[in-house]
Amino acid sequence: MGSLSFLGKVYYHNSIGAWLLAAVIAVVVWGALSLTKLLFVKRLSRLAERTKSTLDDLVIELVRDTRGWFLLVISLYVGSLSLSLPPKTAEIVSTGTIILSLLQGAVWSNTLLAYLLSRGTKEQEGERATAISALGFIGKVVIWSTFLLLILDNIPGVHVGTLIAGFGVAGVAVALAVQNILGDLFAALSIVLDKPFVIGDFIVVDDYSGTVEKIGLKSTRVRSLSGEQLIFSNTDLLSSRIRNFKRMKERRVVFTIGVTYETPHEKLEKIPQIVREVIEAQENARFDRAHFTSFGDFALNYEIVYYMEVPDYNVYMDTQQNINLALVRRFAEEGIEFAYPTQTIFLAKS
Image (cartoon, rainbow, N blue to C red; front, side):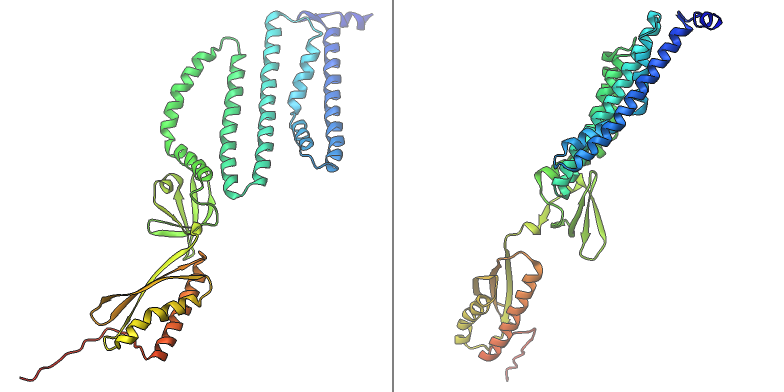
């Protein structure tokens, strides 16, 4: 009888027995939810190992990211339903449950976004991964901002419209303060989407040149020929004149040679044909023209133009070297002398 009388005592509008029953319900629900989560992840993980689909991996991640505090909150709320609570208290319990549920929803949304971004990163190249990272940052800001507004909207006495107006003014101030960072962020997206260059391209920016190593959210890193790393702000990079040698389909080469003034006329006429034969004998080289262009201070100058059909710089240098060596050999066979800086003084007898 004593125990029954104890259970019958009323505390905060409910008997001790009612409070114990609510606690038992909460414990049972919490245990059932926790066990279900554990078994679900274990069973589904085994199934995911035998399937090629990644959708089951997403479901597993969502279940794993179901926080323990969320299960506890749901359990306490279910237990509170068996109690007779004052309207104010019931409103506080309901509001708290909604707010914490929205937080869990934000966690799930973040997990979903991370899953989608991870798939995109695996399927794309490095520069695409940069854009995906930037979009991921923007997506997270949108997700948490949205859920923050939803949470505030569920708090009694909070007027979201006023807050949004205030956030708008604050957002303008923040945007002005971080406009350089935002400019670099959008410049990174522009680089990735418009593709003026990609990772691995050899570019020249003003007096700097090198191979693009990384396109980041704020800066782009370029490895110069001398070995040091050059770091360009994305905004400054897009506002510069960029020469992308990796996009070169063919290379136009212009060089000159000079022969002595003593070279006979018939040899001068033969030089363009010699040059043509030498260039056409080279692999990946296409002869364009060779002309006697000018009378120099100490040489008769020829301008020669040809095209390399491959953009590789090392191949171009190897070809130019072969052309130079072949010209030296052919000119020696023809008795044609290359000119070098000389000065001849003629003395007249009085």
